[in-house]
Image (tube, rainbow, N blue to C red; front, top):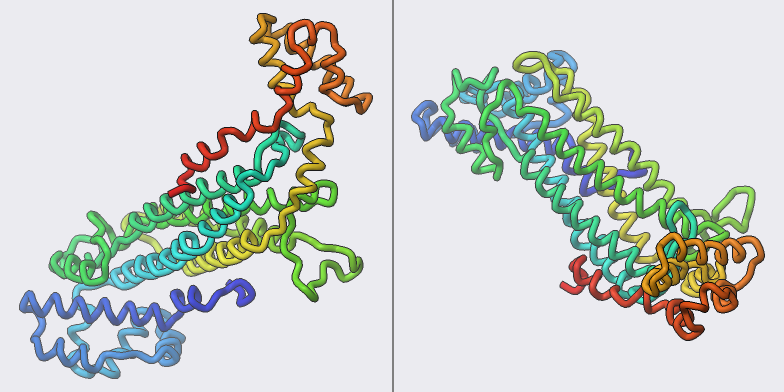
Length: 433
């Protein structure tokens, strides 16, 4: 990922130093397990534990010659350990290191993502939801005014969705937390299965129940899928903010800081650039998810076509989603809300937003649904065409007021009809917990 969108704590997870450190830990743990099984002298393990280290630049230099990163790593470690290095990597294959390390990196990246989601983003959404629990605005379907909601309900929906995303991602992390130390084609031909159990337990991983040369890539696809859906949720929320910030609507707006510039040509512009950036970044994660699914089908016990892909999609996707969460949390926390504009837009259709209530009331008076619909729609179309007041037209309509008194009609136009269950919905979303 380019530096512009790379945050240092996530970059550290995917650094060469972190990767080689995991490799070294795995090799030492395997030696410990082999020693306990009587296959390596204890003094050799002690020497390996004491002397084993690596130099990133040296490994990369060796790799230029041998064209194999694990061999370059083992060669460099041997330069520090000496003769006892012959016991390192016994019975193992490169993927024992690579896949077990990849699981550790996915865990570490996932913990950062979950921490940001749970400790910053969800609390920010919850806080703003309560702040605007009773801030009435128009709900829209197909982009057209429908019936009143509150801005808090919109945020409650986001809160509930983000909790689902957290649950899904935790499950995907768990599924991908698999290590393997089972040798060249997963048969443990030259490695006791107890070594795998020991190494994975020490690292906080589960041994893959069955592996070939690698851990199967469905778990990586599941992990990327969870990230893609999370990114899609963030995109969904930012698209909503972008619509609400349109000049004709202006019910909510990204924070525009002092000294910020919106356009090189037009000094008046205040553009939703963060929302647009996050929308674009979600596309990258979705594309990477497709690549992860393509990685599932490999030749026989393994080919290497997935490797180059994973070196890009896993670091980049976790970096992107982590960045998206950071920015989205700030966006929600600083979001400017315009209740007066919400009220103004709520009244733009002169009461048409209460049409369903009138329809139901007429049906409850004994009219067929078709009759009730005809009466309400007839008056509604006049409002659209003649810019008249819906309630006043209904009061003047002989068919309507034959069944509904002026007082009954006025009661149907009360906003409380639409907001009386807000607390109940908040409760179901867990916002009162």
